[in-house]
Image (cartoon, rainbow, N blue to C red):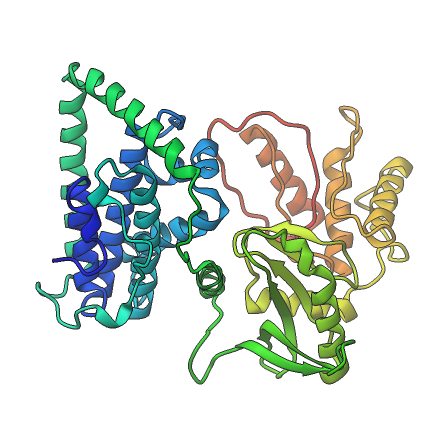
Length: 455
């Protein structure tokens, strides 16, 4: 008998089976448990797309595409969305990555699956016995510590995933041949829509542990960027205490501080509730940065986030911008190091043997001014055919590299012949740049743009 998922058994037998397997293996075999949690999530999401006619089928029917479908995101809301992403990421890591999967990771994945299944049953259960008790809570201390099966290797899990995928494909093919199911499905959709409308009018008092989900998702993104969260070599502090805040006690606690090898802060992370706009923490994060700068003599970069939307702010040079995750230690160190080592683009000499014409040097100067004085991060240059666009770009790259504004530059062209032509020009005018080439098929033709690698 399942400890946490018994309410699924009468109406969602396959989902109950996968969730129960994940539950039984969370401590003894966390990798396999994460696989089964993702499997259970996929079963639940597939059921929703089959039975809830408010959902729009995306361009692909895999789990990732369905989780990102706007109608599905609107259905589950911002509280559940990061939970499902955690389950999917940990499940993918279990099958495709050799990274260590800890029991703590499996427990988090199982916990988020429990909350999603609770939401599913609360809003969609047809039978009163399938509706979970509002007092039901996830309790990791009740999980079994021994495994009913031997610990699975990555290869065995991959084989199992392939077998289940094959069975799912066969089942889908057989369903498509049974036209009489369509009538029953429409009837079920009508019943579910009525139940859903009724349930959504009732207050949901269940504790979905929003803050725990947000914090773990931040931990997961930090781990993907190479930040150690525990152990002797950890470079990350949680709830770091500081003094000098403009409040009666003068004290505060920073959610996360990312440290460099020299013991100085590279960045701080201010986390707000999932339902709140992450920019609500911008001013508070700035005050934290002031305190860290006063204490350690180095101003950190600032991240503020609500768990699934993240902003990066280098307030000495650039306005805040939306990013997909957190930077690695070497990337943060490079940004801070460039504060003192990069030279002025406006006063540096442009190589006259590369940009020989006055309008080429004028274009480079205007770009330099927008980067340095207006703190812009993008520039668009439009030049006529034969005006020397490639040489202008090469001279600009030379200037940016000599002044330590960029380390690498990506040059894109819509035809292989143009790429080869540009490579030959780079080799001629910047022989020390060591250009390398790569081609992609079916690249749409776009206007040429130049954007520096983030400093």
